[in-house]
Image (cartoon, rainbow, N blue to C red; front, side, top):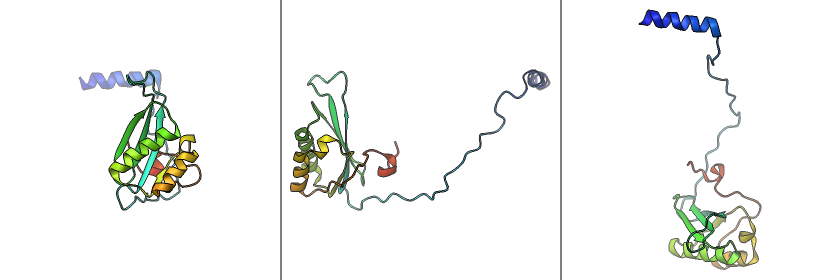
Length: 148
């Protein structure tokens, strides 16, 4: 059996040559040293919040969007469906989450209109939550340190 296999394999290589990859491709690694991602020391101090949607078809109750909140320290996730993405709906969802888990120190968002609206900013100021200035991206592995 092995003599026959060697002959067939030899004939194949003579006829077709080296068609396949003989060794793996050369990879070039980054020369930048990897920095550890520092997680908050206390649970529920830093949240990452983002919106998902529009979902088609909507749910039976008419929910087309989901507001997702994610605690960076414990990796606790909350996902609450909403009918529309407005500043009021966002504040209602954040209030619902924070009354159950406690008020955080910082919220990281992607700075879309429902998070930068005056109502949301005033709401966060009243409850003492910092919304860092500038554009940030929620749910990015390099920022959150989360591997899915």
